[in-house]
Structures are given as structure tokens and as C-alpha cells.
Image (cartoon, rainbow, N blue to C red; front, top):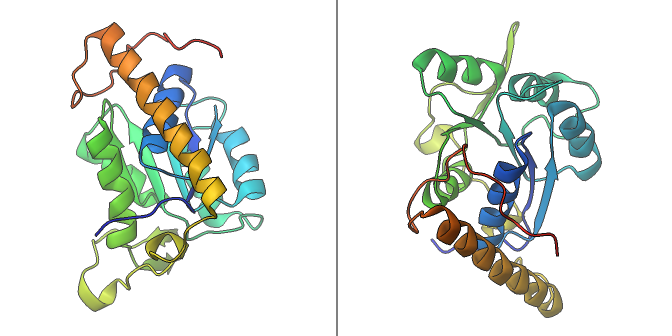
Length: 212
């Protein structure tokens, strides 16, 4: 299926500024129309309440509030505007216990760092194609920790699923221009760090972006 992401809004919460900019640039190359960034869970939650995005992508290790605490707030706080929003958690560790901890907090998908464009794109498509049923229990509210299939997981029918949900031509033109700039920025990063097109962006990457 070919996706039109012009109407999607994504909030990225990441305290490592180079990684925040890389993630935002990757999202721009996907054609995502509205991309926001915050540098910790506390500011991220405030932005989430104001923006009410379609997807949240958050890092695990942040101060003063980490991605797990942010997820719990989104799922359980009375002021949360959308407790069912897909949350993709980024983390540099892939141990089973960490994945379980993330699932228990209400995370939708887990993205291990370092990652490349294909892996990030796959997670976004995953939350569209294979949404999880939500479960409420005395000590848990969030996506079913067992992957749903068939009729147990209804297909997402939101605005970014539909081919007809396209912005006006001027907006699309601006998004395309930003997409081109993002491709150029990522190409510059790859050239300066010796990365190939399919290589993963390492957390050790030093910020080489210029202020424009």
C-alpha cells in the first residue's frame, strides 16, 4: 500500500539534539506533513497536550522525565487528549526485560538505536497496518501486549490511511520542498560521517548541521 503522510502529525521527544534532528529529517523524507520536537518527557507531555499529534516517537533515557514516564502520563493522566495514540519508544538496548518494561508501560512499538530510515518507516507503517487492541486492567492501560491479528485488531481508518486525505496543492508543495531539504541534510550527514544510504545513524554522531 502506498501511503500519503501529508496529514500526519508526529511529535518526536529526544534529548540528544543531533538524534532529534536526524529523526525529524527522516520523517520529513517520508513526506510527513507536521513534525514537532521536544527534548525531554516533561516538555514533550505539555507539547502533546497542545498539539494532540497522530503519533509520538520518544527516547527512553531522558531527564527530567524519561520516555517510560511520558508513556504512562499519555496513557493515564486525566489531561491526556488521546490515551490511545501510537507511541514508538526508541532505546539503545534490546534486552527482553526492557522490551517487556516498555510494553507494560503502554508503548505500542519498540525501535532499537541505532536505526536507519527503513526501520523507522517500518514502525510507522506497523502502527497503521497492525494496530493493537487496548486493554484496561487494575494495573495497566495500553495496547494489548499480545500482537493482535485478524478481527481482533480493527484496521486503522484515520485520516492518514485514506488516499483522498490530501492537503491543498500549496501545502503539498511546501512539504515536498521540506522533504528535499531533509534529503540533502541527511546526504550531507552521511558524506561527513562515511555512512552509506542504508547504514544506521549512530548515537555517537556529532552534530554537523549548519544553522540556516
